[in-house]
Image 1 (cartoon, one colour):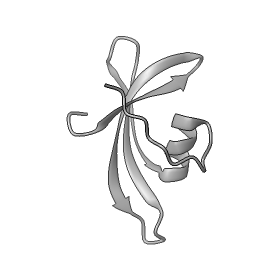
Image 2 (cartoon, helix red, strand yellow; image 1 turned 60 degrees about the vertical axis):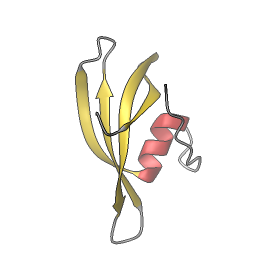
Image 3 (cartoon, one colour; image 1 turned 30 degrees about the vertical axis):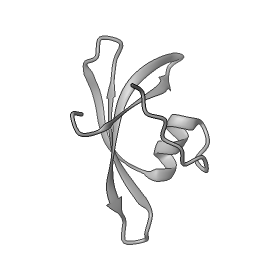
Length: 72
């Protein structure tokens, strides 16, 4: 979390805070990211390694929108 990018995402109708970090590319050339999700109290609730498409769909509701908008 300390070296990841802080982002907002929707989960079950509420906005939550998560952290993403680019890990590199798979053998097929697809982007891979670490993702840490938190609850409303800031407690870690999930950790995943996600493909770029899955991460972008989570963050932007569109797997083709490769934008990661950091929270301050």
